[in-house]
Structures are given as C-alpha cells and as structure tokens.
Amino acid sequence: MNIAQEAPGAPEEHGYNVLGVPLAEVIVGLIAFGVLLFVLTKFVFPRMESMFQQRVEAIEGGLVKAEKAQAEAAALLSQYKAQLAEARTEAARIRDEARADAEGIRADVLGKAREESDRIIAAGREQLAGERASIVRELRTEMGTLAVSLAGKIVGESLEDEARRRGTVERALADLESAGAR
Image 1: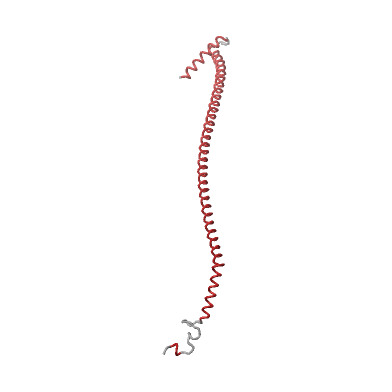
Image 2: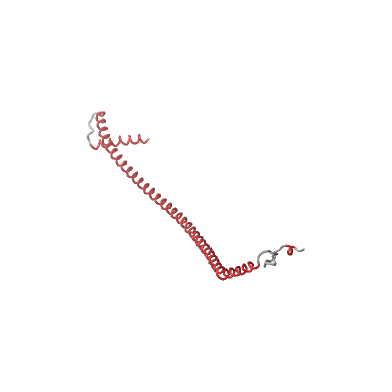
C-alpha cells in the first residue's frame, strides 16, 4: 500500500501540493509577491536609484572639491614657502646692509674721534709749547737778573749797564743750555 492511500485526507485530495501547503495560499502569495514586485520596481527602486545616484554625485563632487581644495592648499603652501624664502633673503640682505652701514658709521666715528683726538693733542702741544716758551722767557729774565745780581756781588761792581748785562746773561744761558743738552 501506498502512504497516500493509507492516510485519509492526503494532501493531493484537499488541494495541497507536494510540500503540504495549500495551493490557494501559494497562488495568493505569488500574486501578492507580483504586486509587491511591481510596486517596488515602479516606485521604490527608481527613487532609491535616483537617491543613490545623487549620493554618488555628492560624494564625487565632495571628492572633486576636496581635491581642488587640496590643490589650492598645496599651491598656497608653495607660495607661502616662496614668500618665506624671499623674506628670509630680504632679511639677510637688510642685515648685511645694516652691518655694512654700521661698519661705515663705526669707521666714520673712529675717524672723527681720531681727528678730534689729534686736534686736541696738537692744541695741547701748541699750548704746552707756548707755555714752555713763556716759562723759558720768564726764567731767562729772572735768571738774567739773578745772574747779574750774583755776578755784581762776586765782581764787586754793579753790572747795571744794559749792554753788558745782556751779553753776560746770554753767555750764562748758553752755557746752561749746552750743559743741559749733554
């Protein structure tokens, strides 16, 4: 005997298929699936596709913008580096010019200081020479007077005569100078 024959109410007798599911439910399920598939393909999938496409375009646009921004940033960075290098060379040039100017000013100041020092020294020497000449004149006069007075006391006569006194004084001074030079 056959299993289907033994069991009363076998699946084929009451509209069941091989799986044991009623055939009417399978047909209703297939129709519902078809309607759902139609609605999804007609309305939902195109919207999802357009949203997906918009999203892809937005992402690609964002990537393009990011690449542009990165390119601009790289250009700005290279421009900044070039300006920085130019500023550094300009600063070095200004520093060198300042050093050269400072050296020139220093040389000028030293030259002027030397000139002023030489002028002061020359003026001092002239003043000393003038004072020395004045002192020497005073000393000669005083020495002449003292020498005449002393000679008058030694000789015992007055050497008041001007001509004699000058000759005597000049000889005494010449002897003193020659003794001092030795």
